[in-house]
Length: 272
Image 1 (tube, rainbow, N blue to C red):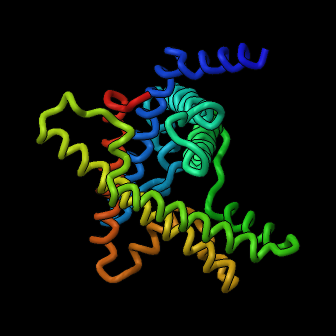
Image 2: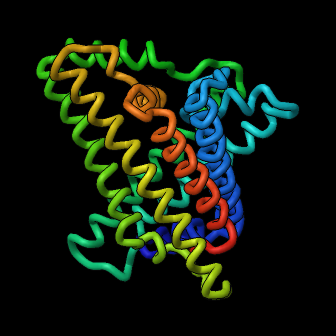
Image 3: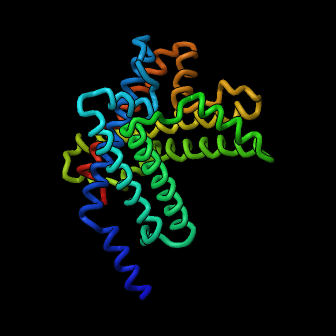
C-alpha cells in the first residue's frame, strides 16, 4: 500500500499538467521581477512610482491594467502550481543525493515552495480586491512579535536568517550553480554565455537585496528603530539615500530586470 501511495504521488509530481502550470508560474515569477525592476528605476530617478517597488507593488501595478485581475489570477494559479512542484521535491525529490546533502536540497525546495505559494496567495488577494501587507503593517507585526517572550531575539534571528538566505542566493550567482537547473545546450556558445550572465547578475542582485532586508530587520530589533523594519521597498529606499544612490539603485533595478528575464528563459530551458 505504501509503495502504491508513493507511486501515485510520484505520478502527480510528474504530471504534465502540473509541469505546464509550473512553467506558467515561472513566467509569472519573471514578470514580478521585471515590474519590480521597472518600479525601482522610477524610484531611482524621481519619476514617482505610484506604488512600492516590491512584489505587492508589482501586483497592484498589474491590477491597474486592462484585464489586470485576470492576469493576477493566472499568476496566482501559476505560482501556486510552481510551489506545489517544488513541494513534490521535498517529498520524493533529489534522489541523486544522499544524507545531509539531500536534506539540504529538500530544505531548499521547501523554502522555495513556501515563497512561490506565498506570492501566489498575495496575487490572489490583490485580484480579489484585498490590500496586501504594507510597510506599516510589517512594522506593526514586528512590534507585535517583540511583545512575545524573547521577541527581540526572534526578530533578530529572523533578520539573520534572511541575511543567510541572501548569502546563499548571492553565492549561487557567484558559483553559477543555477546552471545545473537549466539545459541550454541547444543554444550557441554566445547564447549560453548571455544566459549565464543574466543569471549571475540576477542572483547577485537578489542576494544583495535580501541581505539588506535582513540587515534592516535585525538593526530595527537591536536599536528599536521601527522605521527600519521594512521589506524590499524599504531596502531600496535605503540604497537611494546613500551617496550616488540613484546610480546604485539603477544597478539594482537592472539586476532585477536581468533576474526576471532569466526566470522567463527557464520556461524553455528549465529541467523539470
